[in-house]
Image 1: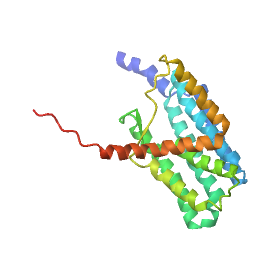
Image 2: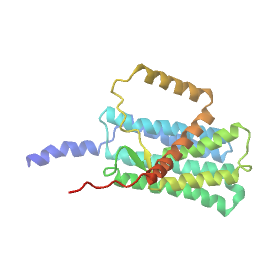
Image 3: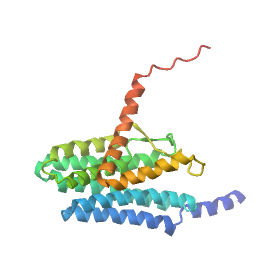
Image 4: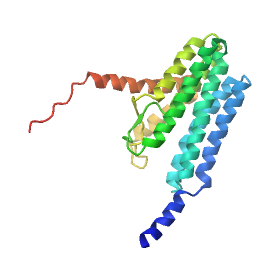
Length: 251
């Protein structure tokens, strides 16, 4: 009886709804919805920027919940639904409206691969995030895949390329991102970085240079940043294949 009384407050807390972290999740959801509307209106650059904004807000909601001790089962489920809209539906629709309309069935098939890949990636993460190595993601994270697709639209539009001119390149990139999300390739998660640990001065200087680099040309820097991250998992995988198998010690 005493043990049941001790568990009850924790269960209530786990099922509670907290305002602060869910505000960030709602903001990310709105940004994803805004991206869909702008893509349908032909304002592709606005849609791409909105997806990046959703990515930033999505990265904040979990951290705010942990810092304020307001994690909840509701928040986790709400975050997954928001991610599906912002990083599954919005990028695939953006690509379809920007480049795939003239491709017929191939176009909507490529867009659906990305959308389905995001859904499967999120479902797999929700079911096995407690049993995998926290240092790595299994498959390309959906926000990174969405940023890769949105960044391509943003940077190509900045160079005055149309989606019609690049439709086949866009299709290959979209399918690559969609399949990467459901692959077993491991991508570094950066979750083992200790933000509370003291760092040398040079680290702060490099961080400042990083933000200066992004601000100098956001479309290009962000696109190549996430392209490099998407390729990093495959490069690590290929390097791992070249290593000789470990020889077990003799008994």
